[in-house]
Length: 365
Image: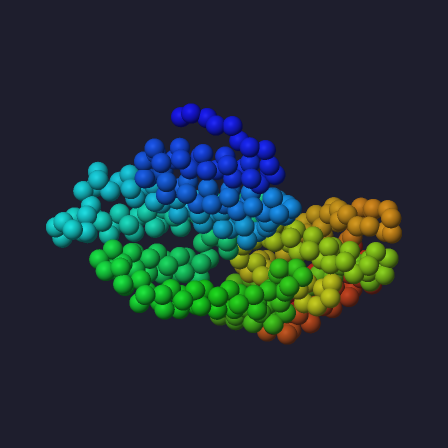
């Protein structure tokens, strides 16, 4: 391909010229690759226009942009796989019933491939930014899997219908809108369960789920423990470094709790600097070990804060009170919370940065 000299001009015009040359080169590539690369060309053209207008394109690389990129890459990969397997699979909508069935199955497999690639890219990005995030909640939560399956089935039905009659796309739009509204409803319902500053369960949700777990433990005669945890001298942190520093401490403690506890443990923010933890299938000795491990590990967390013009590394300690329910005695949630709160008060009165445990018979350890 002959090369031509580009006239001088602003960077945006030069980059746009390169893009035009690149598109002419792409005309010689198979259609299968255009499915993946066409979107990239339009993105480059948009970035060139923004650059010429004085807008820094890097400022647009937000979380939404990363999610959009993951969707584009996964769709491109699914398109490549579909076109590559179309002829080898002898799949066609204009052929026999068996050929049409193979076409539908191929479309479903490629839609599933898109979902898996998109999920892998998004989960990898989230885990990179937040290592303590739960993979089970991100990718394999029951609501998430149900939404993915519903989206996949609707996608195959719509593609099959539009491939036969193009006008069907107009009738498909209400169903797509309804599916997206259901996704948004599930997202809002999930957000209503979560405390905004910590990402943990809020007090109402924690108490509701804890009541269910305790009822199950009483019914099946299995051990269970409830812990109340309080950050020591948290008011001094807010007074000395400001409320933003206090929020950073809360976020750091919460992230560590998610990483240190088991998947089936319940942890929530009970109010202010106080946290509630429910430990199912946990005996007295196990509850003591878990509480001590939490206390020791949380004391090692360093939160960078600013004190005027100077930065500082802030460490905080926690006090923990634990109440244990075992087979020989039954308590409801309120009784366990009152016992754990009493143990927490004793830990603070004994000097803070301590764990105090009340066992089945009410003894303190």
